[in-house]
Length: 148
Image (cartoon, rainbow, N blue to C red):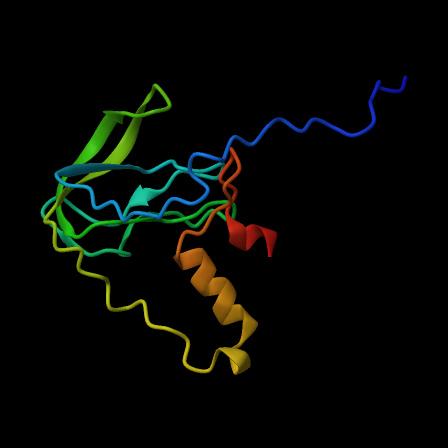
C-alpha cells in the first residue's frame, strides 16, 4: 500500500522579521552550571573530573568510548562543585557535573589551531571534531564525527 502524499511539502512561515537584523549578543552565565552527562542520542558520558577540580572553558567534563557519542565540555571556567543526580530539562534525574563559574572564562590551552590545515591529515580533523563534542542541531544532537 502506498502512503498518500502531496506536492510541495509543508512550508510554515519563518517569522524571523523581529530578529533578522538584531546583533548577536554574547551571554556569559554566572553562578552554578549543571552539565548533564547524557546530552545526545549516543551513550551517556562518565565524568572525567572530580569534585574540587578546577576546569577551563573547553575542558572535557565527561566522555565515553562508545562510537555514537560525544564528550561533554565546559563552557565556563571554575570549580567542580558536585557530581551527582540532578533533575534535568528531560524531566528525569541524570548524572551531572556541577561547575561553580568563577566568571573568568579562562580557556583550555590545549585547543590550539592546526598550523597548516591544508596539509593536515584528515584523521586529525576527525579526532578534533570528536574531541570538541560537535553535534548536529537536530532533535537527536547526533555526533557530527559519526556522519563524516
